Structure formats: structure tokens, C-alpha cells
Length: 175
Ligand code: 5GP
Ligand code: MG
Ligand code: MG
Image (cartoon, rainbow, N blue to C red; front, side, top):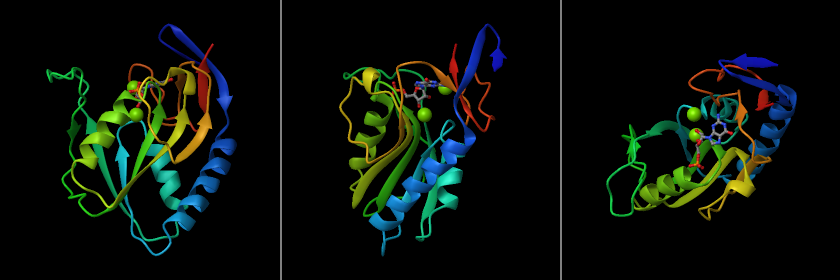
């Protein structure tokens, strides 16, 4: 159990279960990308531990890079577009595996996917550790999903509450 500010979080997914599932995802990726050299595009900050543990289980050659998305809402006519920041590599012609911590409404990944697709990658797959199907508002194809979870706020193993709690080996859920 962890208390951060006014919120108490209780155990949800153990470190051991996370690592077992990551090994399974890595085996799928190793098979799917045999003979290729994918570029892992890691969405900071939340995916940093998942990406590190996943990358250590990959036996195919792969490159790893990082991006963030702007947290402010843009003024596009579409409204609330999250812009990609910090990605300097060309993704044209590359086999991309976007690595994310959690898909909630799907808005963030939808924006990332659309902006990456506009740069003509050879392929684009998404690996997310967590997925809340009940919260999804934006249809999105997810090729590699660690755990489907209920629509509750979770913390740990990269995910934060108000900047804190990212550094736990387990995932906890709001009590
Ligand atoms: P979406 O755009 O899919 O609604 O939200 C995705 C982002 O919201 C995630 O990358 C994450 O930063 C944050 N988020 C969504 N659900 C949770 C949650 O249960 N816990 C935490 N800590 N962050 C979440
Ligand atoms: Mg995230
Ligand atoms: Mg956060």
C-alpha cells in the first residue's frame, strides 16, 4: 500500500506478473519482426520502465528512441491535438513499434499514430502495457497489450499520480 498526498493505492499487478507478461510480448515481437530492424518509439515519461524491460527481452536488432507529447491543448480546428516533441529521427520507411504505458481514451496514442503515419513509416504497431477498454473513445488498433484492466486509476511501474509513484516495481490501483 502507498499513500501519495490524499490518495491511497493498493496492490494490483505484481512485478513478477508484469515481467512474465513482458516476456510473452517480447516473444511475439521477436517472431513478428524476424529479419527486420524495428525502431521502438517510446512515449515518455510513463513508458520508460516498460520499454526498458521489453527491450531487454528482444533478440532482434532494434533501435530505440523517445518522444513526449505536449500536455497543453493545441488550437487546431480539430481541437486538443497533442503534438509530438523531441523526435529527431526520420521514421520514413521504418518499422515502428510505439511503446506506451496505458491506453485510456486512446486520444494520446491516436494523435501520435496519426502524426507518425503522416511521415510514411513502413509499418506501425503499438505496444501498450495497460489498456482500459471501457474508457476507449478513439478507436485504435493495439497489436501488443500487456493487461486489459478495469476503468480505475492505476499507479507505479512508470505511471504517476501528480508526478510521484513512477518508481515502483509493482502496479497499484486507487483504493
Ligand atoms: P488517453 O489519451 O488514452 O486518454 O490517456 C493516456 C495517458 O493518460 C497515459 O499515457 C497516461 O499518462 C494517462 N493515464 C491514463 N490512465 C491513467 C491511469 O490509470 N493512471 C495514470 N497514472 N495515468 C493514466
Ligand atoms: Mg503515457
Ligand atoms: Mg501522468
